[in-house]
Image 1 (tube, rainbow, N blue to C red):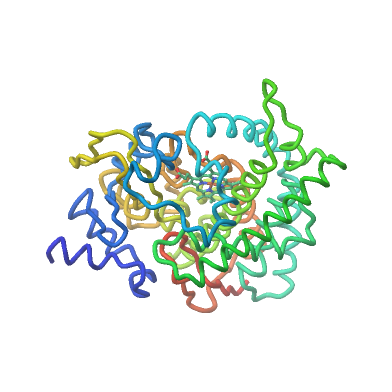
Image 2: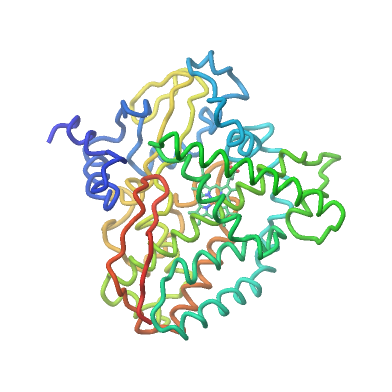
Length: 407
Ligand code: HEM
């Protein structure tokens, strides 16, 4: 098959491709380290080393607006119809580069330390136990709706200091907003994301005002109070920061559990290795993140002329896309990469990114998934898939619609 034909098979709008993108991703990676995606106008990287290095390359960034105007890089500005969406992510860590990124990340890190995450463990364990006990009572359950979603949102809300009664509201907003990050979206989807962002902004403004009056030592309250050499976060910065923590912290964790438990259960004998204790849950988590990752594509802007990646010279304002699903199965980096080996335990994958945008929530995510896998193994030694699951028709955020299990 010609390279052009192969590239044509990389079609996020094609349900068959999205259902199982790995054959196409593998073929593309073996055919070329880089290709031009004419639909998205992006140089697209397929191999582990190039993705690994690009994540760390300071000549590229998640944003260009700290250096160039839209006109200077030959782009049109943001669509004014989606102003609330743009406002909600304006100060998100994922939209910033130094010096703003350094300043806000330092402040966030202060209230997001590994120590704070460890202190959360009993609460995380408590949420897992409560929900998994209820699943055991039912016998058959749906992992995502009955467990992973309420669990991960309870964890992040308890960390942020958001009332648990509001979790459904937050979930609905988050689900609507993250659809904006897909490669192909419709105006209806964009409008829904924009409305959700507007509602979320109003909600968070009220939350911040409440925390100012009644500080509770939890994350939003701490962000309101935090001081770093006299620096403080503005309300707009707090709005973006809490939303990115909720969005990033919730969807990826749920999808890792869904994709990962599907993977471990469909490979004969692998669940037994976890149940027997041969493979600690902490180790199993890493293979779940590698083999069927919840996030498949990240982008960077070229900020300097003359950048060369995988032999391709690029100019300022060009965009690079990194295919995590292709890179995580690169045989140049992983031995027998298509094999799901629950004991592989390779922690140096790129599932949490790398460089200055490395996932600030990685210790929390690892802890959440570990506690879940251990809790499932303890209660359900004979766990089995009840109904063959299906994936949402999205490429970038990869997750199951449901995972029905028999306990
Ligand atoms: C299994 C679950 C998770 C996965 C796979 C994941 C993955 C990632 C990746 C790949 C990045 C880097 C993006 C880039 O370089 O362009 C990232 C950044 C980020 N993640 Fe996570 N994440 C997870 C869970 C979490 C959790 C639980 C939180 C917070 C509670 C979180 C908060 C963030 C934030 C705030 C950033 C942006 C950091 C920055 O730009 O400095 N993530 N995540």
